[in-house]
Length: 448
Image (cartoon, rainbow, N blue to C red; front, side):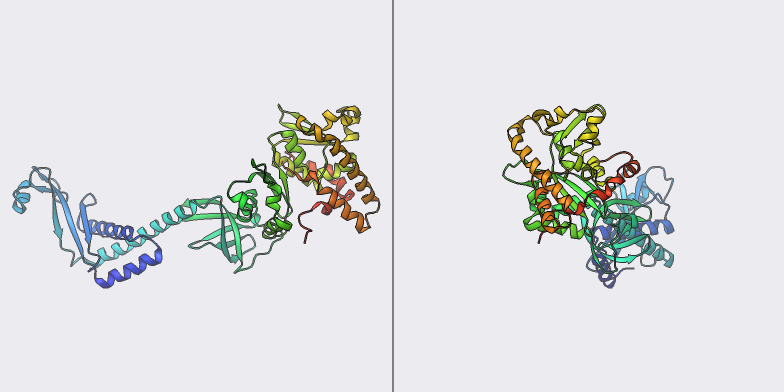
């Protein structure tokens, strides 16, 4: 039934399937044993198969238990028959009798072949699942094999991964043969095989890309605490380090913005705001609303909400185009944020002018920053004057450059999280869309 030629073919199959030789041989033995029992013994019978790896010869042994009262000769052997083979056999011993497999019928051979193929498929599924289960929540690079209206198939080695259209970055065009980085969002072991789902819209995709580009993030020196994202448009990334000698934002931006630019290029031009994370929710929320200034923050721990007051001329910047900056800040921080201008807050009685102008109460940071407050207020006054001048003569490029330079100062820390009802937020804040040029604040992407 087997030969050296057969074993050579089997070795080629082992190499092709990538399954260990011992596993393959055990599958073959099991297939032969099942086929033999099905055709010549009852299903409860026990058999043992030996395979000589050098010659390719098979040996099959029927295993029977020695009993005093014989009931089923396929699984039992009488004491007299057993002692005829070997006088030392006693009740309860197991006797192995070699079967003649040289003349096994064609039907048994076909069944062996079918069972062997089935075992190979099952083992392949298991091997594939184990390989990609370890890669869940990680980035892999594949080649686009097929592009359809509602999905794309990405070849990731031994199988293809499913990339749905709603998991593709809006506006990007995929082409067959294109190398593509994807985020493994799910690995499902179903009845039809291992199903691998990948994505390019997950917030964690941005985090993994920074791990690839920034050594400090990869080795854990700089931590990415949170990411909020609107795919294809903008992301906010909160970073932190316990090492006082390292600038976490600068590490992620890289020399001349090279590191963040590589991430932006992979995301099809999606803008990324990098902000400083803080355990203090007041500071964190203030940073998350960058690039706008924050005058005052009030925290409601019970409702997990915050009231934020910004200068009148910064309201549209804090809210963002179609409410985007506010939404991202909400998602990033996890706090529900209500944004008011100074005049609105005073009119509603939420604060008074004395509170706004008071040094201790107007600062969104804790008391440890009081010594720096005087300089911050001076910088703020200069900044507001420059912004007003820029709005009046927006056509003059010199003024636009000054506005960008002012915005690169300490307000770079940015953080994000989100409102529960974004549709209402879009409608409420859409009136601010035409009041400011948001592109002036994308400081990382205009550098040479």
